[in-house]
Amino acid sequence: MGWLAVGDTYEVALEDGGVVARPVSGDPPVGRAKGLPAELRDHPEVHELQRFGEWLDRHAAECAAQVDHWMVSSLPVPTALLAQVWRDEAWRSALRDLVVVGTGPDEVGFLREVAGSGELGVVNLDGETVRLAPRTVTMPHPVLLPDLEELRAFAADLGVVQGVEQIHRATWIAPGDLDAAATSVTEFSGAEYRSWFHLSARVTSLGCRVEGTYATDRIRDAGRIVTAAVDIGDPYTEDKAWTGRLSWRDQDGKRLALCEVGPVAWSEGMRMAAALHAGRTVSTDGAA
Image (cartoon, rainbow, N blue to C red; front, side, top):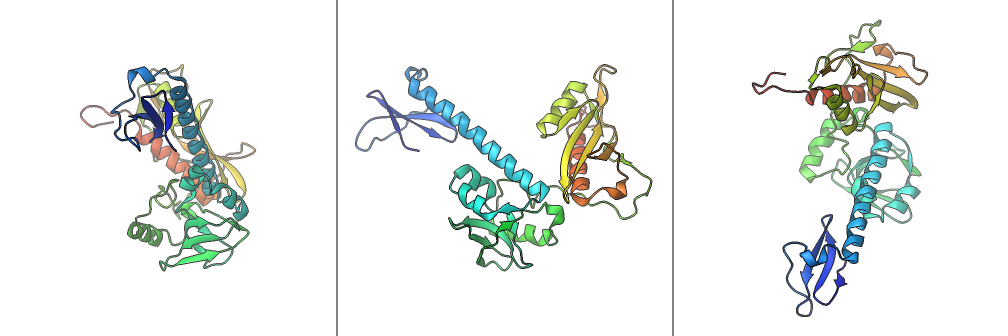
């Protein structure tokens, strides 16, 4: 974004999400004010830039949230749609370097470019930049990527930094010896919080919801909607709060046996429960 004249003395611009100013001196202008001068803080152009910067931040967050939804749900995304949004820096930052999968078994790689025609430029596991032209691609949840460890190692070699967490997203695999009658997991139960309100704030900060006495996360797994739920208790019964059992329900509200929970729903439910456990109150001597 270019510089905008404010009076005869300064120019202002957006940089790194904030408004900065520089004095008009020389041709081109040189120098930079260390901060926004007091006389500019109430200037209409400065207020407009600040509001625009706030809108850009919200837009970037919305783009990242949408891409995260596509990835967690492993939804097919039309390449024509990617071509339309790729021109937008916020969309490009969220999409660039995600692992995409086309229609063929070899159509896998890190997304680097999208042409106006919808053709994709990806870096495959051989380190080669190849062109793909499928009608749709998926950005699979990492638990569904068969070569995840290889992808992680290759990404480290390439210096890949994903705008939306995919290959380095924490994942959990359900154990193979699950009790057929079991319907809940207690691995992350018992995390203590100073109050229910601190616990509920932690829930919402993770992008999850509070529904009654549960922290919930709705997950699309193989076309089925599943809700992972962690018991967080009642805000009016105790001074403190603790996390309880993790369970999963189908879209009709029926509790699922653990052996009925799909790999994505299992991983995302465990991820939520682990994050709630990690945010617990820790005493000064290091004990929870």
